[in-house]
Structure formats: structure tokens, C-alpha cells
Image 1 (cartoon, helix red, strand yellow):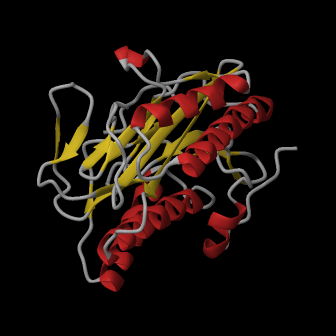
Image 2 (cartoon, one colour):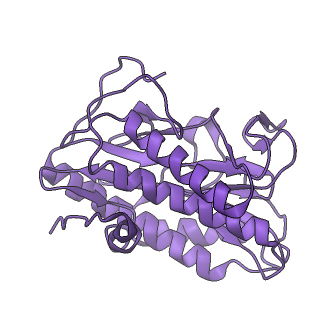
Image 3 (spheres, rainbow, N blue to C red):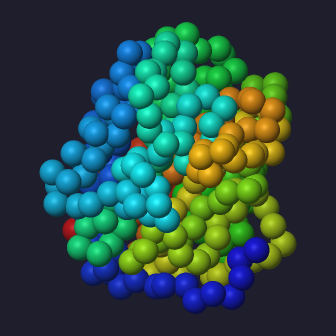
Length: 278
């Protein structure tokens, strides 16, 4: 699963450049979050994100990537990832996952958020979103102490099991799509799975940069791809959530490159304090 491909390790100066790209992504997603509301189309959100990226001197990672036709992925309700922005108008109660990437000075940042549009959401949907985001932060926090990459998936799976027990549900962890290394290209070795595996994967050591992204459902973890050859949906039409951040390992600790505060607030419940790259 992890393979033996070469992992691109970064110097501290290169990580600082990735931080700049990560902040572009963070700011673009912030603008999308502020704009998203019932009555707005997915294409309008795509335009907002692309303008935010280009206004900061960066270019969208996704646009043209293997033929992808837009600057962000917009996945609604049972769509897990890779949804293509369209004229579809958001409705009260929609669950919208936005995946965004940017390239600045040759370095990539990648992050995703799930938005609960409007107010008409069930307790189960709200719990799914919270559990998925929490599991992402558990995985990010694990980077600070894990010896090998498989420790990240263990932390994510454990977090979702704990949330499921508390919420009275069994969350589905999507296994067909995983996190990844990132740097001079958007997708690099190693794979970062969202569940425990016997395969240890590479050592976690300074210079490693990863995009950690649990995708979680309210039902079966099985997925299928629509006829557009991009949009991934749940096989049983259950609602899905997706959260993602890019994290870097330095000699002094970790920094969440796509979080405006470097991960300070999200990591705090796990007893982890991110390092400053200043």
C-alpha cells in the first residue's frame, strides 16, 4: 500500500515556502466559507476561490490536473470527493465539502473543509462533521509523536471509533482514497491511510510533508465514481464529510501549513503545540 517510491524530503527553507502556499489555500477556503449559503451556485464558489488564489500570486493546483476542469472540488451530500463545480444551487441542509489546492513559487498547499449550508441539518449530520474534523486533528497530532506513517491512520481510526461510541453510530471510513505526500507536486509518496495497517510506511522525520484527509460517511465506506469520471459518491447514498490539512515535520516539531494559526487551536486538545516557522 505504501510502496517503495522515493519520499521527497524538504529543507526548513522549503517548508517555509510551502507555508506560504498553505496560507493561500487557507485564505481561499476562508473566503469560500464566508460566501457559501443557500441560493449560491457551486460555480460561483469556484470563481471566488480561483480569484482568491490568483490575487495572492498563486495558481490553482486542481485546474487542469489530469484534465480536472475547475479550481476547487465541490462535493455535496453523498458526494465524497472530486465533485466538479456546476450551476447547481446550494440548498438549506446541504453538506458541502470543498477541496482546494494552490501552487506558489513551485510549492503546493492542499486543504479541505466541510460546510453545513444553512440550518436544516440533523443531529447525526452535525455529529458526522464534528467527528471527521476531530479525526483529522487526531491524525495531525499523531505526526508529532509517531515513529512511522501508519501511526497516523491508527490515530484517525481510533478517534472515529471513540466518536462513534459517543454518538451511537458506526462511521464508515473510506478506504479507496487516502492522504498523501506533498511538495513540488500535489500528490507524492507516501500514501497516508485513514485506518490502521500493518504496513508501517516511511519513518516520520524532519522534512516530511503530508496531506492528511479523512473521508467519512454515515453509512457504508464503499464508493463509486459517477459518469463524469471524477465525482466519487457513497455506494449507499449516505452523507459524507471530508477534512484535510497539510502538515510539515521539522527538527523542532510540526506545523500545520494550511491552518492560519499553524494548527495551534486544533492541536491543543491533543497536547501538541505547533512550531513557528518565522
